[in-house]
Length: 185
Image (tube, rainbow, N blue to C red; front, side, top):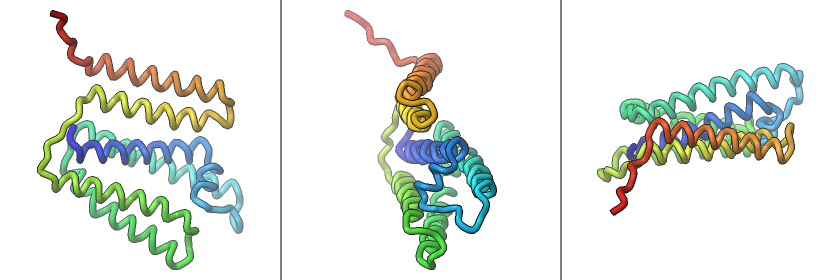
């Protein structure tokens, strides 16, 4: 996996995490983004956040799958589209429609687009082993799962979620891409 694919993988994992957060804890996501429910029913707001979160989850999985399969044309298409997202998200803050905390989403879009664009333009051919990429992804997903499990299940439930996701990811990555065994002289 080259650096461009790695940027897509990281961006995809972040988007999946945000989507999962919105599906499992829509109030928490609303609070992070600085959005309130004034003027709308609580149920309608949560339903919209959950629907948007499902779209975010699907998009994040597209990014992860494109990274794993090194679909470079998808990488190239994503750069200008994420820059457009940055411009739209920044403009809604500028005109006062969204709170300033929405700039966090805008900045994430720009940072991801720039990282992928620079990596695509780079002539370096740095690669990562699939085994290590899956291990890193499983740790990140386990951490997100632990954070999400903390409020409803407490510290022990949070630790259990982390261990379950982490262990599953490690077992899968080892079975799928076992590292080369070093020969003992």
